[in-house]
Every structure is written in C-alpha cells, then in structure tokens.
Image 1 (spheres, helix red, strand yellow):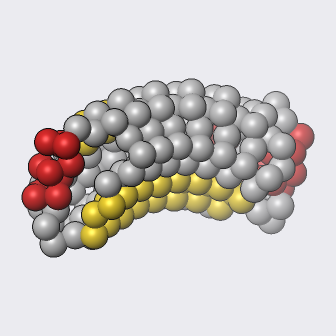
Image 2: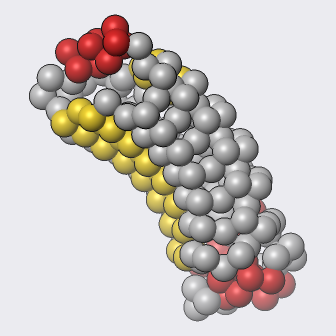
Length: 184
C-alpha cells in the first residue's frame, strides 16, 4: 500500500508519516512527530515495519499498536493516554510514557526492554519481573506502593521519588539494588 493511500484520521499524523520520505507503507521504519497537535494515530496499523515512533507532546488519548510488532523505540511522553497495550511489542527496547494518565502498565511481553521513563502517571504498582534487560528506570511522581524488580543485575539506575512507597518497601528496594544508582 502506498503511504498516500492510507486512511489516516489526523492530517498532522499523515504529514508526519509522509515526511519519512517513504512512499510504500511497508518501507516506513521511523515516524517522528513531536509537538504536532496530533489527536489520532489511526492509520498506523498500515505501517507493519515501523521500528521507531515518536509522538511526544501531542494530544493522544488512545493508541492501537497491535499492527506494529517491530517497534523497538516508543516515545509517547506528554500525551493524555489512559491505557496502553504493549503485549504485541516483543522487540521493544525503549519506552518513554512520562506525563500521561496511565493507571496500569503491563510489561510482561517486553523482555527486551532496556529503558523505561514513566514519570508522572497514576501507577499504584509496577511489575518489572519480566524485563531482565532493564538498565534504566524512571518512575517518579506516580502513586506507587509497590515495585517488583527484574531478576539479575542489569539495572543501573532506578528513580522512583514522590511516590507512596512505605519505608519498608524503600529499604527492600535499596537492599536489592545495592550496586545500582537508586533515588527514592
């Protein structure tokens, strides 16, 4: 399918995809569209080989990535997302979802995830046990009462200040991450 024939719901998103310079939908690997006032990414399902998507600082309230299984880098900070399904993104390595309205985060299908920036959401708990490749995690300014860590020693940095972690939870995290930079 030609990029120009994709039925996009948002003209600013269409322009961003066209700016990739690719004419065939299957050839589009990178879409960058920061601060473009994009409110819908419908049509993205026609980009099956997309590896990098940057829609930081837009107006997205929903995003269906089920047609983009090759995504490796996903930048969605400063939107209005209330939910995000990442189950089909097994190649995902970097995820920036800071400053959204997310209440839950399921990362069980993202074993290759190395970087997670999820500051400023509404998480009560985050389970990172299925993410053994994680090296940097930012979870500041949430409602976290519990963080479940990945096995292994790849984690280099954990920032989770301004949450609702008990003193016991903080002590347990510090103990488990003795060789890591921790800011709680």
